[in-house]
Length: 426
Image (cartoon, rainbow, N blue to C red):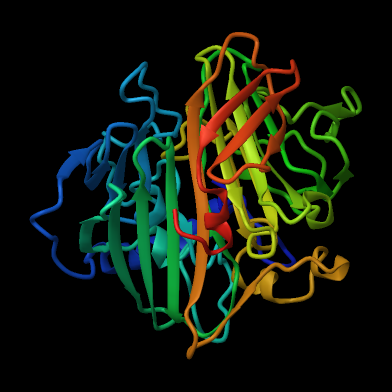
């Protein structure tokens, strides 16, 4: 998770410390919740977490009450079902007093407000890692079905550290292997980093997941120490180094001086963070995208976003690189996190001048108490044929579908209303 390794502006310290300071004292309050449940909604306990279920014939989505984490998500339900999202390995262990509330349900994708470690207080506000939206208990508002068969699950959360309300709407549409996400923020006035924390499961075999992104204008490794050996954490990437190719990212070591951050899992025993900033000019008015192809299991996962809203994708590269509790050297996953933030450093560094803002890149959203802010996002997954190796480009030329074009020249067409990220209906 990108927040793991988050730092303050100067004197960056292990994020385990930030977790302990921010998480333990507030965990009981956050878990208390915001209200009851709608009995008409399908509800199950999944890997120790009470969860609401949203499903149609194509996709089944589980969303935890605590933190609103989205996983497991089952795609291709009528064919060969698969679940691409990560579930942290301690989920069924019911470990008491975890060092941060977000670690309790940690799985899949969740909305972060404010995104990052939030180690430092901001104007008297002390937010937990990734904010209450990722750690507090949500309330079920409704489950609805539209005439076209679109199913929508609506949840709400009243924030306390900075007063406001967040409404989460997740929708699935017939014949589309995607989940449409909308988060509406009311109140919560002032600047804040925010975004989605999508986290994929990694197989044991090295290098079988190929990751690609839409054109980017800046690539940079985390500017500060992300994994501190003093806390039993280890990293392989250089600090604050820039790059133009995910396959050649500067490392801490002389040999190899560059490492491949386009294929995973890799570099067992390390946990790292990097970020790429979308090149809006190269997108031709279309969405920014991120894609991951698991060639061993034969599927592709993708995410679509408005680059004006979420300009940056942070890679949380975790391959058993943390040895404190509850990690214990066993967590392997890949976060592909579309955000408006300064890496995972949290509220204070994201709202001050930083290495990205100096280059004209936004790292926080100014939230207006009188005008709701809407964040739209699409995640989807589909089966791919043998030989489909990596997504080279995404074709948005036709409404109601995208074409995922591989390096090998194959195309997988996926029905999806990509205009949704710009405000159109799913």
